[in-house]
Amino acid sequence: MNIAKILQSQPDNGLITIKGWVKTRRDSKKISFIEVNDGSCLANLQVIAEDILPNYEEQIQHLSAGCSIKVTGHLTSSPAKGQNVELHATAIKIYGWAPPEDYPLQKKRHSFEFLRTIPHLRPRTNSLGAMTRIRSKLSFAVHHFFNQHDFVQVHTPIITTSDCEGAGEMFTVTALDLTKPETIKEGLFHHDFFGRQAGLTVSGQLEAEAYALALGKVYTFGPTFRAENSNTSRHLAEFWMIEPEMAFCDLTQNITMAEQLLKSLISYVITNCAKDLELFNRFIEKGLSDKLENIIKNDFDRITYSEAITELTKSGRPFNFPVEWGADLQSEHERFLTEEVFNGPLVVTDYPKTIKPFYMRQNDDHKTVAAMDILFPGIGEIVGGSQREERYEQLAVRMDEMKINREDYKWYLDLRRYGSAPHAGFGLGFERLVQFVTGISNIRDVIPFPRTPRSAAGD
Ligand code: ATP
Ligand code: MN
Image (cartoon, rainbow, N blue to C red; front, side, top):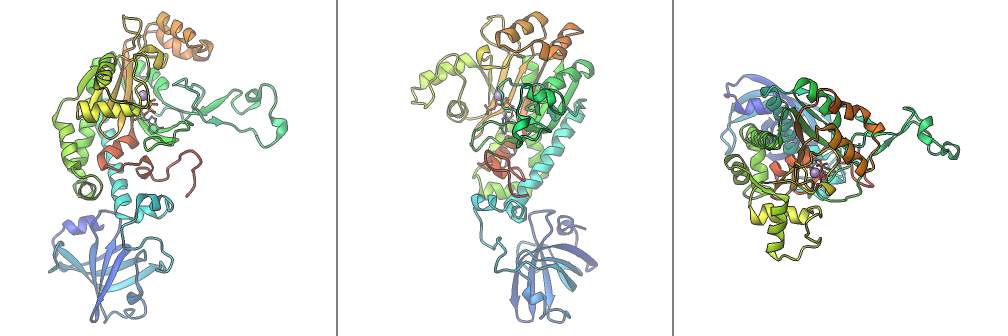
């Protein structure tokens, strides 16, 4: 039994065994109180060890934070405040010591910055442990949601030859030995493993479209890679993205699906991670619980990009990036809109086609596309999606205009030649969702081993 289950059980004096890591040890006359955590929940189990135990003086009295132990004992009701049960040890076995002189995790609270320097040990802290459990529950909730809505999960490739966003932010995957000067010759990738340049996927969308146009409703949930040199608190070079794609679906239905998904995920966590959330509510973001409840209760506001530009201009705010029709919304603009104007989630639709990828469906004004971004307070963009261009001619012309080689995307154009249908989808950044749900401000602290520019160390 793990500690989470034990803490919910009735003390019946029965003999049980637990295994975990010591958080603290405190001695009183002839007795030691040892707080043990096994990662199954935030709370520790209090172990009572008396000096009659054979290894009391030699070992138990030397236990310190980080040691791993096995305790066998009787579970009894506890007189102490804040806990129902405690474990009266009949035997304690030590698996591994953690010398206090150099064990980096002491009892005090450590900053996230410091913890980032020990990514292999930080999961043992309360905050990273709670984050990791919430992340896991959220991941389960994603699959649960799509399963309930009859979506089919598709494993799209991680190595790909299509740069979905066309922004050139791909990591190249090569089997060439680039340290040898003679490797660098004409037609470099022609000699490479795949016979052409390949990279790590920046999105599974294009491949998901192929499956949506066969299976109806599909989704992908996998790692995504972007070699963008943005050292921000919301960008990683390796992150996880949830990408549903739906045939016979327009922009409005797409937005509705995204809104339902977000609400469902957040309410799943509220129901299933109450104790872990409480930690974040108390120590990381005051008012977190209310913020999450409000997301579930209220409809998301919706405005067009053009209306957003009007709002921003009207505000008279001195933004760092200029506000003008045709320019992309920067994070400062997104956050102003969602945090100060709407004070809640905001869906922005119909962006200028010039700032969006080639596959988004052109609106009748020929200037904008059927795009939608969902902005969240404190985060900015959490979802980016669109109705896709299902008309062959329009798509091909748009590719020409954007200097995208039709030959390279022949398979993608085929989807418009054979049985094309209106379809739409979006990408939800999983880490940004975990940030929102926990209130953790830096994206490096919501993924086990963060990869960012000049940093891929620690494991
Ligand atoms: P941004 O403008 O914030 O850089 P984007 O427009 O490049 O994001 P999309 O291509 O629309 O992002 O990707 C869909 C979603 O994936 C985003 O809404 C965001 O939640 C998430 N996302 C995108 N880039 C990153 C990144 N580098 N690290 C973490 N999450 C990301
Ligand atoms: Mn986007």
